Image (tube, rainbow, N blue to C red; front, side):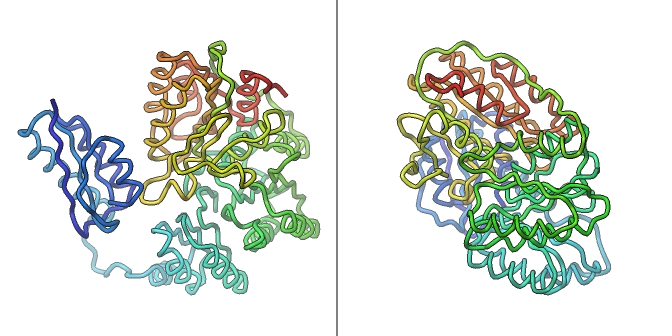
Length: 491
């Protein structure tokens, strides 16, 4: 028998990434069976309830400490571990050492003291506009990592930035390469003659990974946020980013990668790009459009570079029956791409980011038939870290879909890079092995990354293959392989 201890700490706050590490540190305490320290958001409370904790009333401004321990004697040591881990997190956030100069109190004052530069805004979405505008007022470009920013606020900040000759990357910009420095989840690649404009974080990473495998470097990758090519925003940052890359003499070719855009905005941006001096290739996802891998192969041909054989690792088990393709993604664009490819032969696919409204999943994220879930969507990241950092929700869903007799194959993505989980295979590989031990369902994985990434592409891919998955560098190739294991799915 175990003992449960739950307490609410009113008004206490730490960001979700810090609390993820706190939870892991506390879980390592002797006698602690499970530990979850999180802000008491609606989603986090649902997760805790799903873990079996009984929860008192709490508000999103409160911190909840939930412990399951061997016996009552462990509780004091576990709480001491919570306090120590929280103190360490706060000390790390504040920085150490004395200084004779008071620290800047605002984004703008920090930029003015540093003489300008790029501001990276990573605060709760409700507060992002204030910080971004403070940076714009200081004359700086802004990368808004924050998600859940209202679209009207995005439009306002982008219009003001454009009028001042500045660039807003984001909101929800997870990947960029600026001045040779990778930001957010960027992969490690060599500098080179290609520039990327990306209305997609994981789409940008797929391009980076494929180009790196082909030996082609990237001078700059400017993320513009997944909504920039929507009708509401009109491609404001995309056109500014194209101007920036066109002015860079080291760039010979530009590629624009995006989730499915508004048709009229895509046409306007393509017309704008035609007037630039640097050739621009468009990898815009949509029904009947080439996938990202195909567009990268076209870019390589433009550059006169031979297309390599895209690598694979491992071999999935033979089909165990079932009729449905089940995709569980951390990358929204990779999910979009997989749905577009699969829909050509399978028809409608249910999703929380559906290709058409009638295919929308309910809040329980379950449905009969084919389905694909984007765990990085705004609706699933409120109050918790992105699934490339915290895989908890997807791991739980993997167990469920693998055990479902209707599932013919499970399709996953793993996205590497500087800001991502240190060792994603450490969590995912055992989950794949356990799922296949219970029911020998085939698992196909797109592992997007490079050999120089902190996690190591080959190391991660081989660990997943050793767990029983077939692994591909190309998400499009992984999707087509998964389709081959679904009745009626071969293209």
